[in-house]
Length: 490
Ligand SMILES: [Zn+2]
Image (cartoon, rainbow, N blue to C red; front, side, top):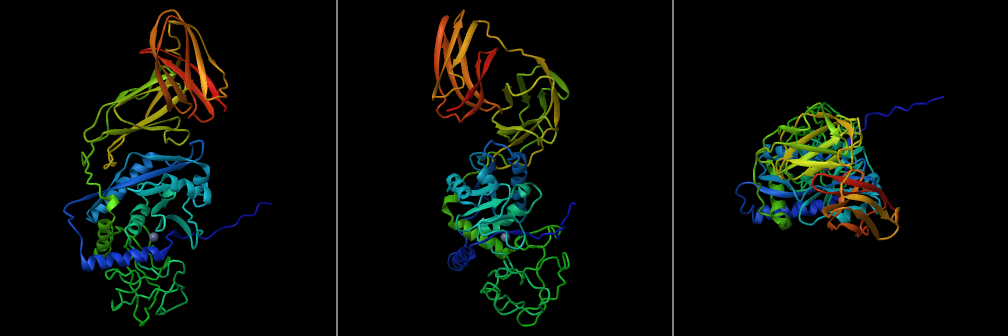
């Protein structure tokens, strides 16, 4: 017997918590606006963002960096559209946290330790784990993301770290001290059997009235957002639930406000002028984010033209494949993705390349087809079109497997059980080579240039900082490569 349980559609919510810390900042920002006002803000301020892409300990399951580029693009478009005066740039590349505890349960003690360890103080920190259930549990629905006022960081679940979710602009609103319009009702949604709202909301905040008479001191403390008491699924984009405010006046919430929970299809979403003032007041006082950074280029052309391997080409060998494309204006880096599957979901090799060419050694199998794609970007603009997904098939020759000078070589001990390993080699003539320890995913972990003399050579190499696992040791000259597998087991 198989029994099936059907669940009702679950609400999608934001897991904002520690409300009192957020509201304290919000009120301080209101006072700042009244007493001082926004300072010296001509033009756009570029705010640094650190994206922490979390995967399992073996490096798998990370959200695709391409999706994060898409999210960053949509975030900037949202804030540019509303003319908030704020744009975002990726500070010092992506940070990858490969830790299964942080990936599966970021809010556990061990997970939070990883987040804290990786947090940088001079950027907005956005973590992307498997799910975004906050430390206090999932509450009234499925959590897409949240801002933690006490840690001053944002968590967005993997499924919502992309170009179509509105989670990033919403959580950035909280980051800059904006509350939900239904502040006070966050954990106790409006009960449909109720008609008139009490003077005080379930969490103790005064209930905002429709006539605006208490808007400075009730609800979200912002006067141009009408009262909202967390209404789920009532009337779509035109609320018709019949709720009355404490004076008996019918409530008419703003279904298009980015900080409320009305359906994403009520679009376009926006911040009100009052919410934008709070965002700018908060930014003004976050001195650590004032970097004076400006993009080298606001635009990035795309897509780049592919040089090699051409679409549908067969490469002669499989152990060495060269990827090359034409540079595009405005880009200073490129995301290169390679995988067996055309949606890059199987076991993708993904890396940011500074330049327009990448040699990959020893990561492809013979006689197999692979897909690849290149996306140009710079730290600010991540909106440029990628190349089409191109395909190539590897040949079966090993074009590179001998350095003619070498007659005999070995690595001892193997498995490597200590912090050092010894490479011994007999060569016929002298040559200069680069020795590299490369992971099975193609990442170079350590390199050493060495002059091999004619005759017997011994070369010691440290593996002290190399985690246990399987690696290739490559010895490369300009046009040739020899390699051996090693296992590090300390
Ligand atoms: Zn929220």
